[in-house]
Length: 168
Image (tube, rainbow, N blue to C red; front, side):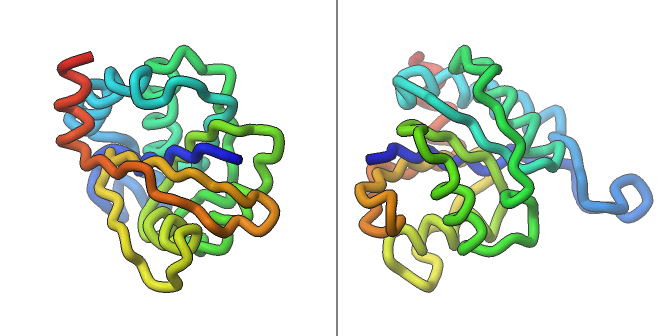
């Protein structure tokens, strides 16, 4: 069985062909600060972590670093190109299934891949969840061989995560 935590990257700079021609945009100052506030709740929400997988894009890597710092798990970060923007929900499931041996996994990535991937793991071909920037959800995957039979344990908006972070 696997416990899968899915975190959408925090608020990033707007798309701009002059400053960010390849869509590899950094977090904004506000995005970083909000994520740090929410990350304070992570030690209570994520009691154990074996692996942190992130998209190679800077906004996701920076979000993964903030989460890893809060979890005391910097050495757990692994960059996975299958989590880059433009990848499919099936690519997402393939990335998850490739994390064999890790029972508690945090994935940091982008929309629409995250919502579509979560929905696929839950048994729906259509998106049934929406991941906001800086939002976090938790799935339990019972059958790692087929990557089916996932169960949504909880889904937090960024605001809810920050509220929990205030109380941490």
